[in-house]
Image (cartoon, rainbow, N blue to C red):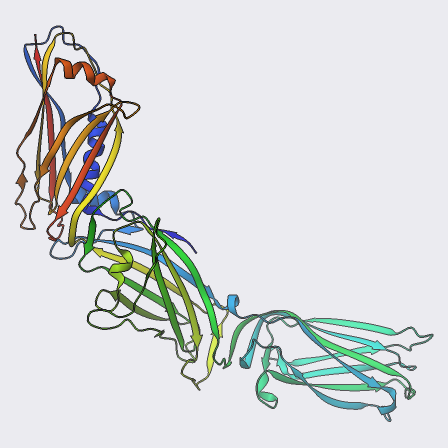
Length: 519
């Protein structure tokens, strides 16, 4: 199963939206200045971005944005890592057996014998009871007896709760070398096997055969072949000693496009956590062995998960809780959390887009459990995972670059010069350095509009805000003549933060205007 995580860095979302605002407002379409005054101010950007607004955009059910009692924000990405059901790991192949009865042993009628049938259970499993949802049992007689008769087959261990399996097949006289063949198929849906009636008391059952002749006995040279088998079995319940079964449950990868818009720099989260919720309805102990590694896009050197952290170890392997015998259909839930104190999970997640590979192997009865195991047709277990990223940590020189279309179609015939003024107010605990550059269609010619514009970091002590000094760009008539030749605007942002939490009441305001000086 393959999963895709969303970009989770809310610390940069306001700056990303800044670029969106630039994309929206850096458009001008045939503005005429013939009757305008000598000086004219035009606001071109006036936008506010709040944590509450960002949360509304991001909280879509799959990506959750919980807020704790202190107003601290986290991002939770929840998904199902894998799920497996009983019928995916347990099946019963079609099987059959045959018995030859020579005429020389039929010295009287009837003749009775008991045979033992080895039930084809999954390798290593000692099944004691098996309830069937569906299935068929078949009998086939191929007789070379020179006299007619019948064969009765009884299986006391196979019952529908009222009567046990009891079927009779008649055969005719064989003549001229032509066998007398008869066959019977019985629907055994709803039947149950009780293998404890045999010795040993698992994976076997006895069947009683009675051969009766209609009159005269067969010749010594006569023979009869009895075939018995079952097919298309499915079950609703089984118990016994299932032994140590090792099953490779899942081997897959998840693409994590964290920070795929960023270039240089680094991000460190203080309390990143990977939580596993395992819901298990198999009635026996299961140990899970987990392997993880992360590979950055473009890299050949994976980071291997280490279940040892600064203050302990993540259990490896770890045991699942399971329902007790008799709690058929119930389930038990195991919750484990992987964090920097018990593993190197911070190293795996990191600050680059990557593939996260996982391999999961399960071992039943690893501790040589001696209690009775069970499973039903609805048994299984599901592993849900939640990546929890509290938005607390540090961002160091993390670079973002965004490109938008640009057009400028003013009537410039009466414009003497133009001033662009930028200002920002920020209470997010994140500072940024912003540059805006124009490029022509071939990216050969460029003009810097905004250079080294500092947006100071706010504080966790809301409502404190950091109001940046305004940035003023003066464009003369020659600069204005060049503007229509540019086709793209590139916004470059470098982010830094001191590690304070993002809280619900943070706010980012951006304002920009143009002052036009007419002739």
